[in-house]
Image (cartoon, rainbow, N blue to C red):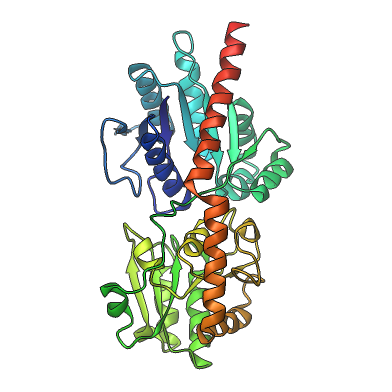
Length: 381
């Protein structure tokens, strides 16, 4: 197949999943065309089967804000025709599905290119639920030729918000050979020079991820006797607040803010505990990646996280904001190597058996084929 993929080229779950989906599809013989404003995150190698088409923004004094959605639609239509795309797969309903539908309609007299929309969370739970965006988001879902969501939780949220239930659940995934435990590395000695345990947090540092809570949880664990370092991977709006909390709590010397990293498996592979105290997670990709590296997860019991983290088996779940319990859970795991290893082994087992690329990528391919067959049948009729 010849597939167009559009993602937000940012340090977030949807961009990561879209990028890695494209690479996996290419490895299976398909050709993937990324259509985006900049090179998507983790897309580090282009070749004949993985190509990139940049959306160029028009600068015109009349426009206070550059019309990205229209520029994207134009680029989608151009690429769809020139590259003879079989379908457009967009990640996030707003504005990507709307742009793709506009592109499809603009060229359908010569070539009908089906649109598949994958919902990742914020497009439904936050943006889509905003009353001003609700009608156009519903339209994007209804007019898509196929819709998928990354979790059962997100599918149910979409049904409740938009009264739309034609959704296939295809969860996020990991490559088992890429995400693995690393027994020893120079990075581990650099971050924990005295052999301290490593607690890691990975996110885009938005408020919904509660990175400040991570610092508070860690500080409380240190007060209770934890000999550890906290590694904060990523960057975003809450960086300054998290840094300030580390300083005021007296643990700044034990916290490493390492920014965005191209290969997070290097950090997860050497970690002992992963922190994910989010206010909302539609799936919890960071938790899955940690478990694949045999790292127990301490997280909030929200959204799709319970579908990924089994409380008491692969990690511990708590109410949002319960930093006291989370710090106790972190300390319990750090102080009990047998428990930590047991949780890690079980987490790896679940990650590989349920969410490996070998299991999930064929689901996407089958869904593509199903949508193509449906649209071809409709065209023939």
